[in-house]
Length: 105
Image (cartoon, rainbow, N blue to C red; front, side, top):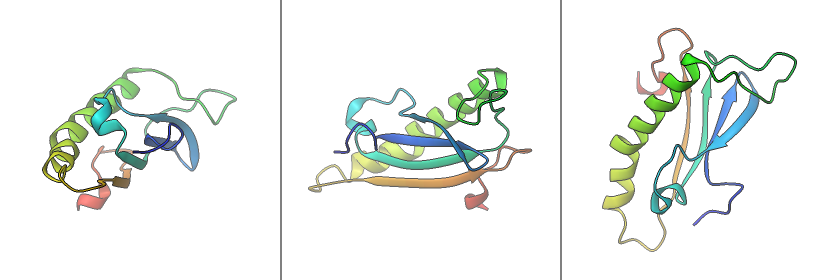
């Protein structure tokens, strides 16, 4: 399992790290997921590049990421659970206008 500073996904707005989140996943999954997600449609806090505005776009992003992790990534971890060490490293960019994961195209 990962240390506290590596656990979860680092959320980037532009090239600036904003927050690391486990998206409220159960510990058995959160401790095995690391990486980053870039979403430029989120609004940085005025005067601060290391914060984000918690508006409707933020909550939509959190909901979409949580659903995606629960539907796609958690089952992957579960099916490989018998292995000694399972670590899922994620990195992708979300298109700012459509919200579509560009790596899936």
